[in-house]
Image (cartoon, rainbow, N blue to C red; front, side):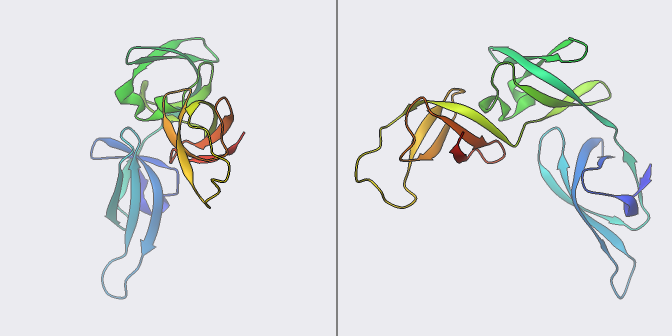
Length: 185
C-alpha cells in the first residue's frame, strides 16, 4: 500500500479491482478544507482514461506490472502468437486483448507485453512503425493543393491518409498512438 501523496507519472496502482497507470496527478491544497489529490488514470487493460480524486493521505494498492519483450510470430484467425525472447515461451492473445495493435504488427517485430500476476494485460507498441504502402491512387501532375491527402492501404490492412506524393510500395512512418502518417521512412 502506498499513499496517494507518493503518486508519480507512470506508476501502476490497483483501484476498485482494476489496474491503472497514473497519467497525471495534482496535489490541491484549497484555502478552506482538506487537501486532496486529483489524478488522471489510464486503465491498463482497456486503455480507458478516468479522472479520480483522493483525499490526501489515502492509501492505494500498488500494482507490480512486469513488461516482457516478446516477438510477434504470426496470427491465425483472431489469435496472435508471441514468443518471449529470453525463455522462448509462447503465448497467444486474442484480437480483443490487443485492441487496435494488430493494425501495426509485423512478423518478427519485438514489442513489450505487460503482465500482472502472470496474466497478460496489455502491450507497449513502439511510438512509430514503418509500413509499406500496398495500394493507393496515383497523384496527378498539378494536383498541388496544400495539405491534400489521399487514402493508402498499408501491408497490415490499415488505411491511413497520406500526402499526394506517396506512391505504391513506398515505406512510410506511422504514429501508432493516432494512426496518422508522419513521414517517409
